[in-house]
Image 1: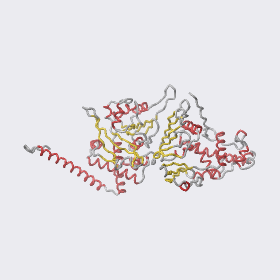
Image 2: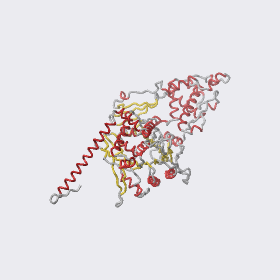
Image 3: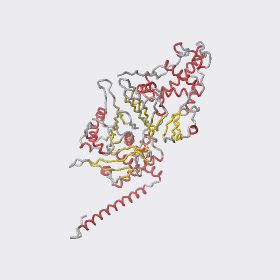
Image 4: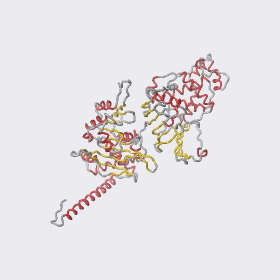
Length: 633
């Protein structure tokens, strides 16, 4: 097998080391004094760099100038217009601008446009253009930083702390280089060069704008000279204007991302599955041997602000009544499996359900790659670990984490996608009273049962009765738009003792014709609540209605942040009447009206049942009309 040359990755500064006031020859640019003359705009190095006898000037050089600091602050606040936003419809009449989104004003924007000829959406990243002179300055600053900036190990402890401190340190280094070398730069040039330094060293280089766009879920690069594609929350799969020009450019990025994850990717081991510091999942390949078009990567972004039930209702993934039902399901300890295809919203739904967990309960989550994000303080977030040796020793998988979790007396256990021996342990946890949520790739209850009962999982059917609820997710097209829907909400009632068939009850079902959700009229959960709380059927229905109205009220007031939603839920657990009165007053609903409406509905249901009974009696009379009247009720 032919061996490929390992790509060399340019070292990135990760700390701060100030440029000396009087640089030695080995600290000057490689291109020599001539390059420095071009950059400063003068025929000699400025006095404040060369004059070491002037104490006052030395002190000025040792710290960034006040003017320089103000300039950086100004451009960071967006006081300067640094990015030209041209009118694309004027230059290309077939292109129609759909949206222009600021990402980091005044530097970066995203323009979403529609090609009316091909009916194709384009995701364009707009960043500042550097003139040829600004490019030379930028190259000189980067070259100097790489040569003199030292590594600070403390910056790698916490990603958030690292980014903040690294940005400040790079800004100080940038200021020192400008002052020490006397670079002649305008305010606009300083702002643009500073933007690219932070973008490349702290951010994700060419895709940094995409990584900072909350509407983007996935990023996919298939090779050099191929446009990067994204999965947009509203538009689906969309092509971008980001292209890696050659193998060296893309290989270097793949290797640097692996290093940022604390891992390595080489020609000998050219496939890597890892987690970025911000929690995003990445799978990447290196070279042409595994992927013939060249290196590739796919990033599934981790949202620091996860979706909540309010978001899912707003997207029509489910109805308010379904969300209220899931709220009760969570409160009363029902175990749930969210099933569906890839990118159908399984994990998002599981995370949003977990926000209904009472705040004091102990929660343990177990995942291969970090996706779950909860505001609960009493939460242990478990993450698997790969082996550190060639023999496979030292690895911690989901089975190990789940066994350890059950010894910690959790009230709720959240397990990422199950596919192996950990599934048996998870169902044993369900059977012993632990409320468990998990995800699985399947498109129906029958598919779930088939996967669970056959290798490599092989769970006995008797254990399946420990599962209470199954959510079926689908990614569909509704009115030429790709959407996610929970098409079925199915309860597992139990197992028929004679035939060993699994008895199910479909509580909610999606109606494709109207894109709405239909309640079938019966739920085992309602019966459980009636027994535990000594409530009537009318009172349970009223509770479902109230919680649905609370979710509707949060949607009305745009209360969708996961911390805010959790706070409202916690307040409802503590003071139900206060929250109900506030919500109903705002929505213009009187509690008496709600009760009257429910009584009318129940009265209609009772009338229907009486009509059915009368019909049965009439049939019996007709059947026995030839003999003596014999009516059996």
